[in-house]
Image (cartoon, rainbow, N blue to C red; front, side, top):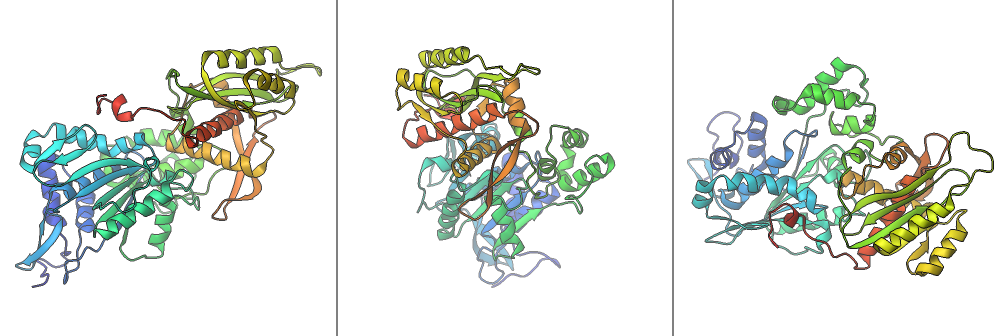
Length: 511
């Protein structure tokens, strides 16, 4: 027997059964859009019953409820009848997977929380559901009692996952999945793994920068080329790439279109204010709120995200690194420290040339020297990367005092090395991998930094850039931050990182 539609236009899908079970088990109500996507996700061939969607992507603006969707899709593949069994009276009948293995993936542990913690919170309040489905809420994973099955978080930093027999993978925030942070490799591995098990993957993404080479960017291109088995669901307002962002009425209409049914729980008026905030990069406003891929702006870093990453976090007693941008007479001198374990950055000091300074002005180098010496005395410093320009005598003294294995000249006038370091810092900001102390001067330097293209291409042939400066001066704080982050990356690559789990920090795992 094959599929026989029960009404004109009925799709051949297990989703008609799965959707109501998701609502009943988890105590949620799917919107019409969400219920329609559940039907699309589990569409099958009307003759063979084979899965039609191998790779799905949901592109929606910030706050539209993407994470819960991945959560309930993962739950469905764990315990609900998502596997085709046979046709009965012309309708497809499903059974639960015999050995489900679901992974919620991101490029950092914090990002896996978006989906994993949502599902943990839902199930912890649904004891009857857990008992009915045989669910065991572990400390960091979800298991089944009486048969094989699990849901677990994974990150790009966790090493090779080639060959794992996973049946569903949720890829979160794929606009931040890049080659350099392991995102492209992780996405390819997950897709190969689900392919071997006749499974599927679901991406959650904000609109990426056009041509940035992220997983989200590549998925959009695959959809445009009508790649077989790719389902790409997006709501992009017509004209959003050219609308005047100062036109409140036009922006409001486009936001209502982009958010769709999610506008019921999103404060559209507040989003209008975010779009028109002077600190919101116009390119980011179009990407994050109007849901359209946009060319990158001239800003070197995501200014809105930088402000959101300010924390009152204290340094641990673990390993530290320093980035130092030298200057003596003009420009600014900056020193930024990074906690290797946490990625938190602290401003040790930034010295700027005062307005109206005399021609013979010189930064207080004795004060700078004392700050570096004091930091070395207070913390376990793995390395300090120093752009030595015009402070060579200070650097010579630090090398003599702390050794040439701890104080390393790192010249920022090398276009290729600097371009890759700036890219790593930019991606860390976008991905939320770092935090900072909110220092006003450092923030001003980072947020005022502009891109300056250089004659360097990345491995995929895209032009790269270094930091320029919007006005007269020197982005010393931003450059010191870049050097400090580069030193942290090298420390991790050298095996120096011994950090804890975010699940311990958030009470999901008890030491």
